[in-house]
Every structure is written in C-alpha cells, then in structure tokens.
Length: 205
View 1 (cartoon, rainbow, N blue to C red):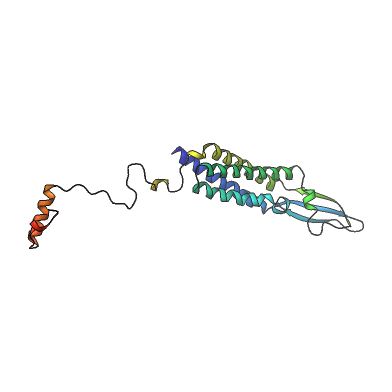
View 2: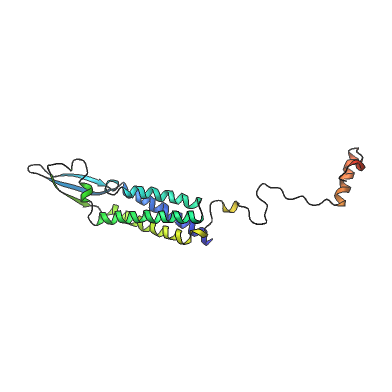
C-alpha cells in the first residue's frame, strides 16, 4: 500500500506541476514599455509567459507526459522518467527565478512594435503571480522527480494485479485434469449402458 501511495503521489505531483506550468505560461508576466525619441510617445505591450520563457510550456507538457509514463514503465525506465521530471522542474525554477530577478527586459525588446531605430530603453513591469506559479511548479516537479528516482524501482506497474504469480495458473488457462478413479469408470459404464452401448468396448472404462 505504501508503494501504491507513493506512485499515486508522484503521478499527481507530475500532473499538478505540469498543469501549473501551462496555466502560468498563458498568463501575462509583464507590461513592457519602450521609450522612443521625442516627440514620439512611449509604447507598451503585454509579455506572456510563453514569450518570456518558452521553456515553461514545454516543461509543462513534459511533466504531463511523465505522469502517464510513470504508470506504464518500471525499473530503470521509471528512474529515467524521474530524472526527466526533475530536469523539467529545474528549467521551471530557472525560468521563474530569472523573471523575478528582472531578466525580462531583453525578452520584451523582441515584441512587435517595441523594436526599431526610434526605440530607446525597454523596461518590464513584472507581475509576480505568473513567475511565482512557475517557481512553485518547479519545486513540485523536482520533489516528484527525486521521489521517483529514489523510490520508483519498488513501485508496481500498470496491471500488476493481473499478472501471473508463481504457482498460479495463468488467466484463461485450464487446470490439469485429475487422474481417473474406479468410481469415475463405474459411472461411465452405467452411462454407456443407459445409451445402449456395451461398456466393455470402451477402452477408457
């Protein structure tokens, strides 16, 4: 039961972190403003998480795929999935931390209308909610990946309960026939007589 709970926790952790990353990637992370030469006024535009950090939605998809893979693989394959989940979590932590540390000015300069010969300094007014969600998703993903790497080899796989155990017949197979007794032969002889047959002609009686 402990192994199944750990597997369930890991799957839920991968799903939660992946969903958080995708939600955060669709939010506006900053309002980017570019100064222009006088007499032109400044221009501004919203910077989404996907534009600011393309790794965020990609890592979210990887984590959702990892949640499915955890149920389908075992052993070394499951450890590899755990390492992949941890790496995706590291990418999320880096992306969210970079945004919170003020690293979005360069990303904002690539937005349409905010570049050109007349544009001067570009600044980004960061909305912390999106990057914070990404940092949270990264922490969950790293913890999930570490749990899978350390404990995943002992977890059951999909359909484990339906597998054949030692000494038990496989599903759909017939049990070996028991040896025939004198009582069985006597019953068969009476049945043959009822059908009008001579039981002495039957080899198995």
